[in-house]
Image (cartoon, rainbow, N blue to C red; front, side, top):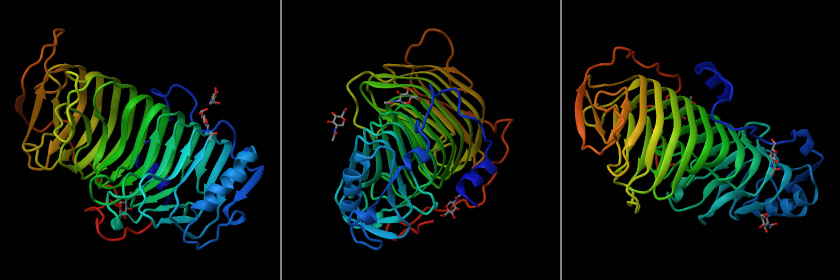
Length: 421
Ligand SMILES: *[C@@H]1O[C@H](CO)[C@@H](O)[C@H](O)[C@H]1NC(C)=O
Ligand SMILES: *[C@@H]1O[C@H](CO)[C@@H](O)[C@H](O)[C@H]1NC(C)=O
Ligand SMILES: *[C@@H]1O[C@H](CO)[C@@H](O)[C@H](O)[C@H]1NC(C)=O
């Protein structure tokens, strides 16, 4: 079964709405980009070659940029890659990657960076195209796989990304992007982010991530980002962060998120800093066996403190969560540790039914205002208060979360090849 139909059968399909501010994806159809085919085989590339990089760059420079409505084509087959490419300022074009490219150099940066693209589609037509990063050979000391830089009106879909030495897919700034039907399979170790996204008006949906770091995470600055139908299969969990000085994040929505194992269900993380995160909804989450549940930590110890008194979090709603953490006393199913220098306001928890495998749990609050959690304070005066820990009993709405078929019991090894699905 394809990832799309698998996700569709498990999670409620719903239309993009709410937090997007307009059209996402390419402005013209795929057929409008098939006026000219720029195949790497015509620009020095060969199936089985040890470095397809130069042929990709050449096909782009000498064919794509000279022909509006063209498709850069990497036919099915296996390729090595040692030379990274940056494909700049293309307009009305597609990158059809039907082959599997395997990383063979350890240079940092990005194997494929698409920069300043407009009306662009990056896809595989045979659902077999993608990149094998062989990250076990240079863990956290090699390239990222794909980076979309300051592009607009684009989509990235139906690609397989395996074992990146660093992050798998980064959407850096830009606007009107759509990322969907992606299978991302990283190692059970930190630094293996699935999708990191920032910018304006992006829709990330129907993505499966296996790793031990960010599943789909929003970074600053960002507005109008919709993330839905995300399967974090033995992943680190999703987040907003890390946040520091000058944070500007608003109108973010996550919906229908499934998390199996990992560090948290969802985290908002910062340490000191300034700016805001506001107008965020996180609706319909199902999780089992995570360490933390809902975790706002504005004193996150893994981060160097910013210079401001704290990032202000306001109008954030968590609704319809179900599942359990492993040890709810050691790591609460919900904790809202807000910055004393910028208390959280308008934090609303509705129908939150996270519980603990140990059948014992606490919740923790610090400088948090809103409703729906035993330790949160209400009221209109928002002064800092120190950490409160409170025992809770099993939420009345708790039922054991469904275990999805195909869940990984433990993650992939960090020091051995990860198979391409
Ligand atoms: C790409 O576009 C940017 C912004 O318009 C411009 O500054 C840059 O020179 C362009 N680069 C190329 C290689 O055309
Ligand atoms: C992106 O598409 C929208 C229409 O969907 C259009 O208004 C906008 O001008 C496009 N952006 C660019 C840079 O062409
Ligand atoms: C989770 O990962 C395992 C190992 O690759 C895989 O067998 C399973 O299909 C994945 N789950 C989903 C939903 O794809």
